[in-house]
Length: 141
Image (cartoon, rainbow, N blue to C red; front, side, top):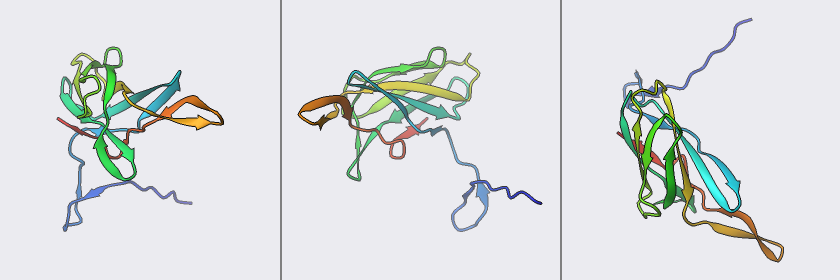
């Protein structure tokens, strides 16, 4: 019995030749909702040692791509430094990898500035959502 192996490859337009995806990529955003605060962790895969990157966090709302204001931008301990203007309309974060951290996977965290709260019965719940989109956000080095 043979096993079928498949892999996802990017093809050069018009040639059908395989090519490597250029540059680092963002992973799926992980989030934690506690006490009306949404904290998101963003994995960054593929930065070179000591490389810096700019992330633009866009929201996922009604098929309109627009920057999402964020706050409390931090990097995970030892991974590097992350900064961002508090609640700036640009949704831009800056990450500088710690050159001594030998990882190929880095993390940046942030909280949302604004969130729409959903009602449950006669009261507003602790759960508020204005979701950033991992598909529409991007990274540049």
